[in-house]
Length: 392
Image (cartoon, one colour):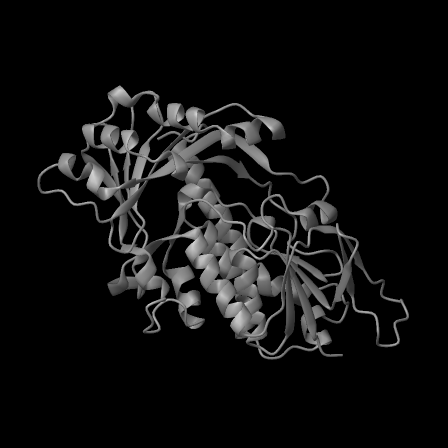
């Protein structure tokens, strides 16, 4: 029996990217998202060549249109790490079009997500909002279906249900689907909180040292406080991210909600230890706008034994499968890569996809090789670079 219907839970970057990849191979795909269509996400992200290569395949990166992502984000090549006196100590290359075909790109998450959603809708892929997953049931091998019942049934909090031959869970680090498959695996707070906002380049231009330009992210270490980062995030470099991270105690849900809404706390967090920072960073901190401030508690995910259910009818991708530390700059890129493997496959039938045992071993092979090894490497490198408290 040919694999026909695929349901995707989560309309983030990974879910929408997977929808485009699967649709391109002729699968019937439906995307379900718990949020409303009007919800927006704070901040910008970094895209490196591995993610941009996929977006280029979808015609979103550089297709000659004014809406191309390349024209809406800021292209750069490396992060400049500096000591507390603004002396460069090292560089982390994240892209270089001469060596990797693409420079890196910093772009607002909402801009990228809107581009992906527009492409999904233009492809005729159904996208349903307000669909919060509540349960998943996989059909037993000996169930009688007379060709009517599909392999997976997902129920939603509004009482509705949907069926599919395959369910792809792209519902983030706090994934409901993962919690149902692996109830003992929960995200682990790393006792590190980031607070970020935006500042106009014009507000700091007068204190940029002579001969220095800000063409890409600068991460400047601090004395007894976390590093402070500024990074251009508009195509013309006229606006920059400004933010820091440091050790912060665990909170309950109500506590995190209070912190996320408390602009006075967020500004105080940015300003702590400000006197020890360089003039450039001090001016950046003072000029961050209140409405741009947001918080980001850092979580990781224990390594899963597999990224699929035992029957192989449910697959986890993106942060639902592996939470990559944001300091790698690879979270969004890996989410896009997770959704892409089937794009390179020919039309698959049931036997090809699930193997002779029906346990999904071929499906897991498509999603897990090398990706899992790469994720482990990024996590380990981040630990070595940051130390146990995420301060460098």
